[in-house]
Image 1 (tube, rainbow, N blue to C red):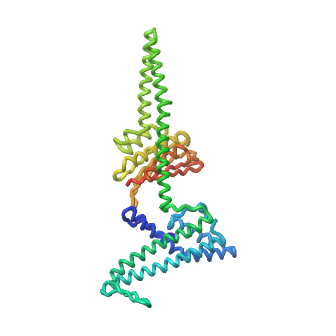
Image 2: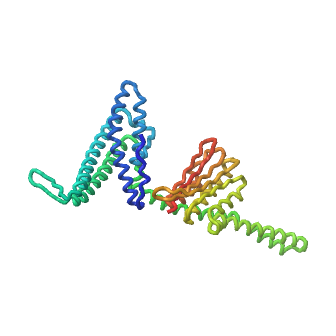
Image 3: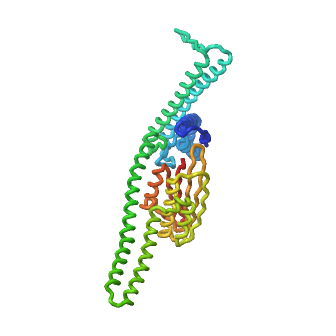
Length: 390
């Protein structure tokens, strides 16, 4: 069972997010009116060893929980839903779904009735045993219609909360669209930015200490030997050596500066900077960049460093013959994102928790983006990043 796709509705970001969330919850709760009895019925059929229908309905229910409620379950197979648990969960779904349907019927009756009566100019009369209230139809439409829709949204939120509380008794669960989850992610991202900055500083210090500083010391020693040399030919040879070392030092300083931040990224854009990564790689790297519209410099920078670190990891560990970098911009209903994929044909088995990849994930998370790694044993390995451009 697939729920309706509500992502095509466009509104300003935060109101749109809240509206789509409420619509998802309302539709998901209504779906429980159908799936709840089915879950109860098929779980009873399990008593006579008829397992097929139950497995299918359980799969539908897992998709409902994920798509409508954004609940990520620790046991994604749904094995926790079995026996009495399935019966209890199914009954709860059915009751919540029935109440939602009854509430929506009330909303529909008030909105449609008030709207229709507005054309006749007659008031809406609410009659009780003790008193009668008569109000203009447009006022009833605005006041009671709006409050009824708000009540439906609040009830849907309550339905999600009740089902999540029950499911937490049986399995680990995370509600990804909850406000507290978003605040926690922001706090973690903030800490991650500090860690990423410290990691970058340590890396720059290592580059300067282990590379540039050692070569400067070696150049100084060579020049000192040339000054002390009594033989002119020996002194000339040492000066030639010092000149070669100085050229190597200039190139090394250029490489260190390029690793800190490539000037091509600012001067010529992301495509040129990635071409530089391909040109300096010891293995063939194919670059395909298709950007539409303006991309913020911070987003280009994040994509560049993800691609460069990924290629560096491939060269060091993957034993690959070829790397492909693809960068595209994709326009979604409520945002525009940059998507980066780095694919190699190596041996696979990349560790997503490795220091380099974790640093990249923190860098991208600071821009509200995400990094994922798919690296089965035997390959291929795909490192993907998605960063909002707005």
